[in-house]
Amino acid sequence: MRRKTRSPALLLAILTIAGTHTWAAQEQRQDQETEDRLRELEARQQQLEVEVRRRDVRIEQLEHEAAHRGNTTPAQPRASQISYEEPEQKTWGAYEPGKGFVLVRSDLGEVNFSLFSYVRYLDQDDLEDEYTDTFGRTFDVSILNQMQVQKVNLTFKGWLFDPKFQYRFYTWTSNSNQGESAQVVVAGKLSYLFDEHFNFGAGIDALPTTRTTNGTFPTWFRTDHRTIADEFFRGSYTTGLFAWGDITEKSDYRIMLGNNLSQLGVSANELDDDFGTVSAAAWWMPTTGEYGPGNGFGDYEFHTEPATLFGIHYTRSREDAQGQPEVNSFDNSQIRLSDGTRIFSPDPFDIGVNIRRATYQMAALNAGVKFCGYSLDVEYYYREVDRFTTVLLPNADTDATLPVQRLTDQGLQVQASTMLVPRTLQMYLSGSKINGEYGDPWDMAFGFKYYPFKRREVRWTTQLLYLDDSPVGYNSVPFAFGGNGVVLNTEFEVAF
Image 1 (tube, helix red, strand yellow):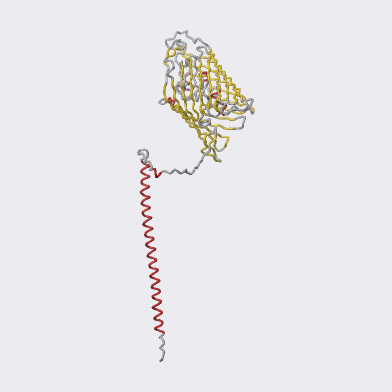
Image 2 (cartoon, one colour):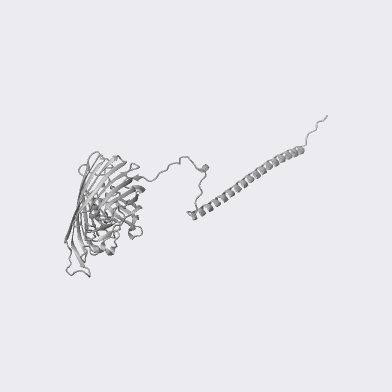
């Protein structure tokens, strides 16, 4: 039987149909894949839209909270939301003793920040209510029993463009004088460091009249107040020109030319035209060439070799009645009789005569030693006030004159301390006496200083102070003008 052969046309048709079927199947698969991808993209787009809406809602919520921050109390986190894991510790900004915290340090300059402040409890209830001066005038004694945030001193210091060109600016508050113009001072100074023997500056600074006004603050026993003798004799802050440097490797000097003895709280138009206040100091440290930070008081550093200091100060100023600060002005100093009478107050001698001008001259000699946690510091004061310019009051006798042509006063201060527990607990004894023509007042203080972090920057001072006819006193110090009796004060202090 003859075998039939397939027609080429039929074979071509079969191949065409098979190929078409395969192509269709491929197209169908591609269409399906395309649809699947489209669905996936649509789902992702919907998810992104949801996330965008959620973020928009959160942004609106944060903007609302920022606009009303402080008006509502934030919700407390649930216990399950609190993390007890140690967070990653990140630090920035170095701390350097003497400078404080370094905020900026670059090739163009440096900015350092430091702080001084303390909280005080003051109890003067044991003081007598009244005080009678040499001339028989009786005054009420201002007695305080209160808590005080006494001072806040914020300081920014460093250099600009050249490390030798330095600045120091500060804000200084006296919170016990709130409500008075003397509460806040903003001041500063600029200086240039030529070499170790000569440096020059201008601005507001302390006249180096005694050791406490020559850069020793805040390394004092009595937090930020002095003995009554130091307070009575010293000058204060003024605007002027100053220079300082090394005399030898173990001796230094400082000199200042300023407007007056105490300018804080005094306007420019109240000063006279005599830019002639001069104050100078020189000191020698023969054994170790240093006397601790700022040449301050107490041997917190625990010297294993005796450190010694000898110093001399001289100040001269022609003072004018109009250029005197108010009683409660910052760190003010005023020329007084030894009974506390201010010589520029109305009719100071009760004879119908006012003093308009006077010349102040004062010298101070000091010496000190520190060894193995013990310290002893002594300072002697000698002051003359003369060349009085006076005016008669309307009802005074025409021949009325001052009973003195020159006031001469002397004083002595002694301070001693020991570290009962190294770097932790210090005990001190501090006293002074004034020998004057109108009284011989004195004071004595006994106290402890506790350093909770075993660092000098944070300390707690508790002190008993006895006053005998105090010739000085104002709101920001524990002693009251005319005070007789015992004062208790305790302060928690931060100084870096």
